[in-house]
Length: 490
Image (cartoon, rainbow, N blue to C red; front, side, top):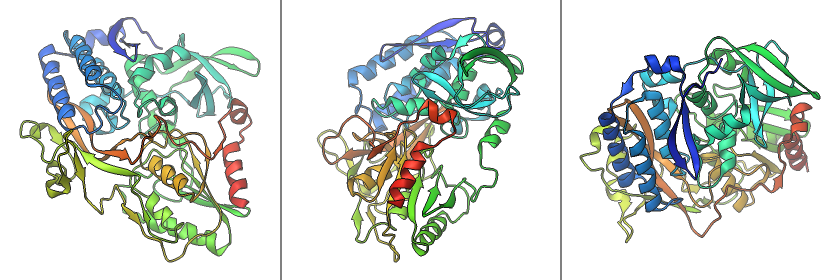
């Protein structure tokens, strides 16, 4: 059960109170970090971000960044557990409003990931109008129906849980829908943000959870087992995946549906481009319309270039956004704290052209795996109708794909507005900032993408907007997919 016995205000982001809840038992055993060690970590992080982060002042002013730093300094003025310091850093990076700037749980050492190690809730859910709506029962033993609302967990109202978590969640600019999508189950990444924040803010004690569930006109209180995260995640994955990443191609009547839940295909020796080509060739040979489902896809490699190459008849310049960095070579003082997979990120050399009057360099590096400057048509062009399913999880490469497809009218976009931000995002290359006092690592994106003309502070709006509704979840109907298939079958 959850026992939030102590509240400590961590500071504010956009006028929200950030509060960590730590049970008394955890307080007694948790190792505390010395304020001097945390101040040292904060100084390193602020120096790295101030010197290298290309989008630091896109969505906040220098004065606001100073205020966020001052809040963080006040928080670390007394000993904190590593979990509380992790939360404080999360709130700080969230204030920058860059979806790629955060203490990424996937990049932490075991001493940090152990903080998040607790059993998971036995259901998947989304947030609709601030309500936790179940999409699948994964082993609660209570047969919780899809469309049911979990009103409270261990006496804590789920609306309040969401309000406590939002200040720590990341997004680009004012795109709040991306935060809500990230805080669902399945959420973003291998360890959803909801799991991480629940472990730190509402740690469970024991192997069961008491839920207040509303559905079918009644509200009932049920006890259900908590699940190891691996079992929960296995239940969410396709039973017979067509690829190591859950990609699949299905024929539904006169339409082929290419589902790609991720483009983070970095580590497997798997021919993902061959999978795309085979799928599109099948659609061509069978004279099918084509639906591309990216709704669960947060990005990764620029796999979209391989898709677009099958849709264009002439070379397509992807120059909607120019690339900029804040430095040519990193300063020696920061070098010991910065890790990455490509040494060229430490010194861009002649690829960094400038600086301009504001201290930015234009980055000219054709052929980067994360960016494609020109899309060259493939030999076999798909000429049928294409619909692309999009949503708020599309916050990186999939955001860019959606923006290109809409601008050049290469497909009809169906679903909900994307994550990311048309005003510009950051990514492409990264440093992982190692903070020696705590052992925490924080992601630092290195390349800023600037639009070639003024853009709204928002994601990409689909051509056909189909919001997800409670009735759809309860009836197990996918109106978004049905709309996309109808469009592609046209």
